[in-house]
Length: 209
Image 1: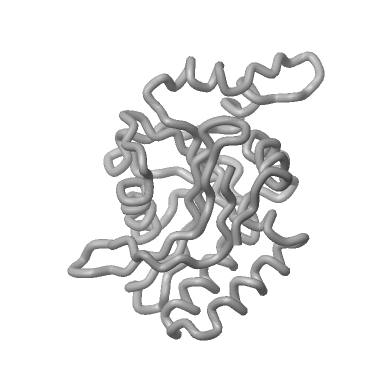
Image 2: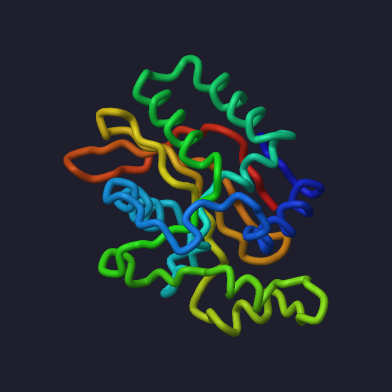
């Protein structure tokens, strides 16, 4: 399912206001597990059409943008489960793990050695560049590219869901390059010879602007 125009108008606001949630796990940052970081690293390497010198990554992991496809998170989760009815048990395990991990947004920390090209986009960055609060100038995307000239936009992710045997993973990764220019969807990975490999299968909603 593709969501365009009307939903993207909502997405634009969502993309620059991710820190408004009253329930945010890990206020100071949660170090993600090594397997999760391995999947995220594979996604950043294999899922992006453009290969910028700097990857600007929002440090609040969630499925919030993807769940715009439905009225509530639970409805969104149930729609994914319905779509996965014919999938393998490993796939369903990974999907359920992703759903549960991302029920609440998590502010995360990554290993600096494994993600040297990544700049984490924090709550403070969001407030400085996109805040709409009274008394604070809303500078927007021009200011974003002034600060990150070697990036191709702001990347959003979820925490990866993993199967119990550690060989299947599912996660959300999306890129917003301007207010109404972006692509957001789920990605599936399989572990082959110790490496996470992106699979061509399409699953879940696509949000495109």
